[in-house]
Length: 396
Image 1 (tube, rainbow, N blue to C red):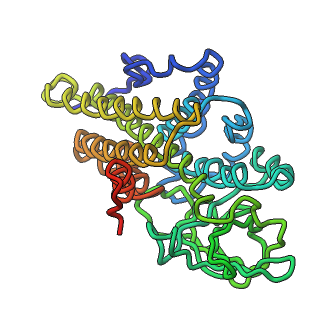
Image 2: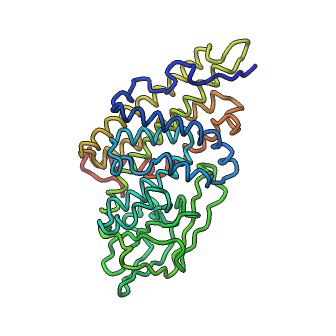
Image 3: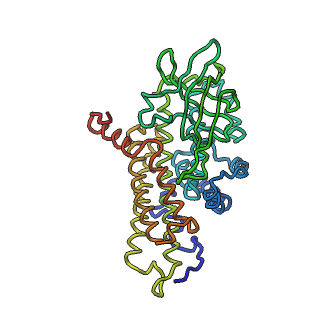
């Protein structure tokens, strides 16, 4: 019944990359990925469970994240989308909450500025964003709007001379309790189009309240936002954000990041389940010596590898400028479904120890539920893909 400590790196296929996808990276990218993996192992994973249990974000980690320089690896640093995806998977593998913090700041927030701001706006804002001197959030989802937010944005923006006045509410906004800026998407009352605004969180009328009692991604500081006659100078209206089609330019790319999160969560499941199976003894021998346990581990690995293979190809298409919305939708739907299956198998493999965070698996299991739901539900992404292959929309 004993459990002895084993270094995961002493086991075969320590990185879980069973088909050696990482070899598709350049030598420079492989070295950089190894550097980042080491950082995550030293600085993130050891504190992840404690932060999750307390529901608190480790603010002292931000300067360390700034030093390792993870923001905008493709546009700013010239790395491939495959490299960026594998980095996001590794961040999730260490802790889904910190990966989500990065996904919000780097993907959704920074991605909005990179894709939709003018050159002048980018020059004014991006240096502080890249260096994490300014933390960002992304305000799209609303209390009464989820999958229908494209056509049902209730937050309004009204032009008043050289300013805009924002009114409304947003919900589930990650980082918003401590962010410096939030990109708010609001419906222009003049033309009924959704437009984007960079909002300083210190402005009068802006209020962010932490959402309590979560069972998933507890370290992430999600907030309810209220905008009560918030006055935004016209310079802070994103020049290229003039309809929801523009917003979709950001969401297509960040949907890829969430699918990579699903890969990372499966790799985390594999790490913990395999180590437990090798260390834990039942009936006088390791759990890993039982056929059914090996079958479970192989199913988890198979799910992870198939998900990774899909994401590798999609990242290559993104690098070539050929990735389509429906491909991102299928990737998000498929990888998160495999993730949900994998974390359930992993939790069951640990038995009673799978429901306490001391053994990590309970946190991994719970965090998977948020990844399954955000950036488009499984159902909506399935229907987006279905529309693409039939030419018929079944969403409404």
